[in-house]
Length: 107
Image (cartoon, rainbow, N blue to C red; front, top):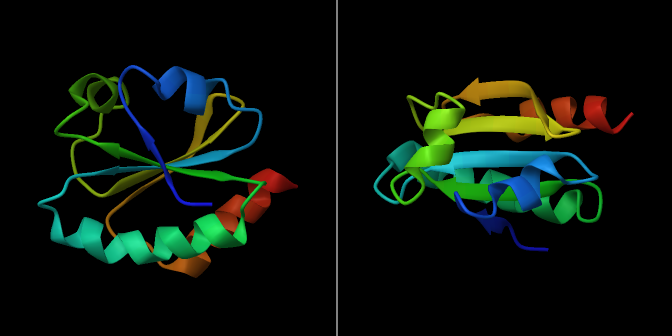
């Protein structure tokens, strides 16, 4: 499954109300590090299909959600479980780092 695009208007339905964990990538098209992070997230989306949703939120187009979660730098990645953020990273993260935390919330 491809990554899911989330917006200010559908964030609650896709992320907060999700029954499975959701990893949200706060990004922007002009952000070089965000472009580096993207292929890693695509791999995780394939590997965790049906278990975890990988969601992307463009901070330029969705300022309300970015502000709600105090996103000041991008990429910022937030792992949600039960509608609550349980882990946050700022900057490009290795696949192993993200997979380790995803496994923790799945068990």
